[in-house]
Amino acid sequence: DTAVSQTPKYLVTQMGNDKSIKCEQNLGHDTMYWYKQDSKKFLKIMFSYNNKELIINETVPNRFSPKSPDKAHLNLHINSLELGDSAVYFCASSQPHGINNEQFFGPGTRLTVL
Amino acid sequence: TQLLEQSPQFLSIQEGENLTVYCNSSSVFSSLQWYRQEPGEGPVLLVTVVTGGEVKKLKRLTFQFGDARKDSSLHITAAQPGDTGLYLCAALRGNNRKLIWGLGTSLAVNP
Image 1: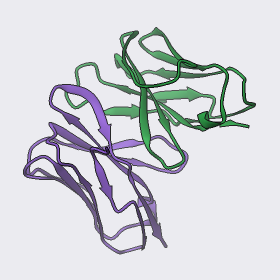
Image 2 (image 1 turned 45 degrees about the horizontal axis):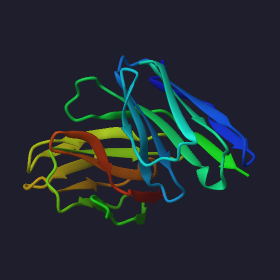
Image 3 (image 1 turned 135 degrees about the horizontal axis):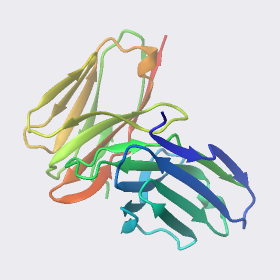
Image 4 (image 1 turned 180 degrees about the vertical axis):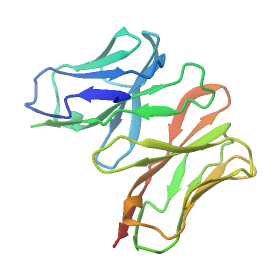
């Protein structure tokens, strides 16, 4: 039943490691996003894919690499993790032709880098 | 420069009180959305307002879009502990489909 799901929910890892977060949506949406929410709760867009094609790539270190194998999945791989990467990462999707671009969010992945 | 300013940043009130939170900008928006994020969860869309002066009600929540489509308010009547959460506004400008997000108002309603 879950509309947008992410795994894992929690991720604790050491600095320098490589990790991935997975996202899937069953809403039939064409557009998917990755957001980062820091400790001050600011929600910052990182990437957006439309039908597997990258359309938004904000100023994000190239250690972050999104991959969209199909339009229902958008994964995020992070290389050489740093302390500042600790945050909650949200996946979201939106309707293909929704004029207001309303977002449907996953439950988030809390990443802690030690 | 933050395009969408939300105020207050934090609000702690007693159950039963009324409150209003604001989302302001100097820019004109084509539409504006309000989301609520509960602790440990992702934001959930509450409402979208599109027309200047529009008022929408969702039970005890009343949303208004400014006449000039530059600002919005959310009024909660008789707040309940279940209203606790982070209230985020997000808006679209012109034909740009990238949402602009406010920093949020963190609301705590104490029993």
